Length: 587
Image (cartoon, rainbow, N blue to C red; front, side):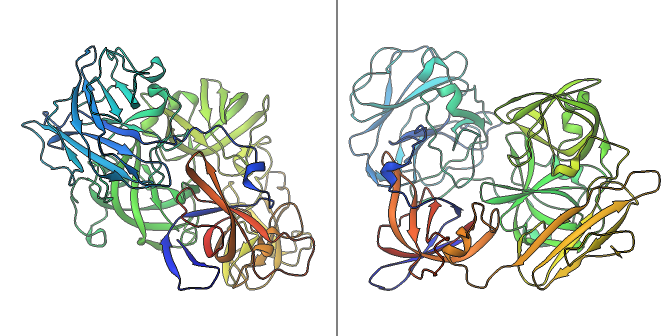
């Protein structure tokens, strides 16, 4: 996705690679906005620590320390040092730094090598000879070259950032050290409160090492943006023979594999799509950009890419070009009937990424979007999307969803209201894929219901469907604005409620006033838009870090009900007031 910009005097265009989320907002000066607590640092931070280099079982030959600059300006590191002390020590060794760290960029410091490991680090920006502890230690980023003193340097002059890691570290920010790493795992700073998001930096800083860092596979990056990663172990994705999903799940990180399976769920996360797919052996998460427009729930697909255990969740990281639809709407597999006991730490792996159903489930409480649910076997956790809240105290006859692994807990993720059944004697509501309302001309809409062998009746003119209406036998093509209404029936069950899905054809050229519309909720909500033009009117910052910008349409319409301004959330934007930009993103 790209943002194209030029100065308002219409000089030549420049192209910047950006992933952008467009958020609806009124035209308000940035200084008047309520500001969230600034938990993204406004200074250079220690983003990754790895002391297992060269140890038995390690991949990299050297220990390393990585820095990250979450600000919008380059920062000179001339005269700075990184300093290391053992977990309980007070004697500090130092490595001198030079040069600068780019805005929203990294800086790699290579330390001592061991006798193990097979892979060299990317070209380091600085080199030292400190032999760091693999499982515990302390690292400080200091803006001078004088050795620190005392076991806990927090508060000493010039200490820019400090990390204690491992359970035996006697000092750490917030009094809580980061998790214990090993020869194969380092500690990495989070991108945001929820975790590490590829492409979103590592600047989360609440001044508590235990909260701000996670144990993760080492992934060193230098100031040039060169990343270290295991070499491909399978060649070109397009040349790989498919294997069962169960085998792909346990392949080593970085292994190129191909799998075939049926799509059971699609979610947006971090500017990419998480597509849950499964075959007869297991399930996995396929992660790639721009997949939602290519695959649908019920499609049988083939995908090739690299396996990555993303904090314990098996993911197949791919490009959209390496995903092929083998059979459109082949049918969603019947969900596996499980109980809360199947979400236990020692059992959840058996159902991870698969479509499951639990019966007689009561919603007990909600803590920050994590719902505690109870069935006859105990409790488990569900994390539905923000648009699908569960009702506290409600008992559902059945709850369906896919199983994810999040913060060391197996969790159920319902996909839509059809997954939440309060009356099992009633046919579940009909769902449409895509659900609209904004689609491209020629889009084909698939209807389905969770009850096998139910018959779907529908209309496309907005009229109320009956058993005399058209019987659904295949996808419905949308060439003009229409409203699909549908319900499902099956002998022995009460007919489902009527579901209504309005569709509007997206314009070839979308303006800001089209997105804003004349009502409170945009018809483009959750829809991808491309090439939306505007002139930047203000850049929003948190400290020195850019959070996004406001832009205004240079070609307003005549409708007083439609706003001509919009806010673009993009922490890495380099736009300035007066720039004419064109933005791709999701509303």
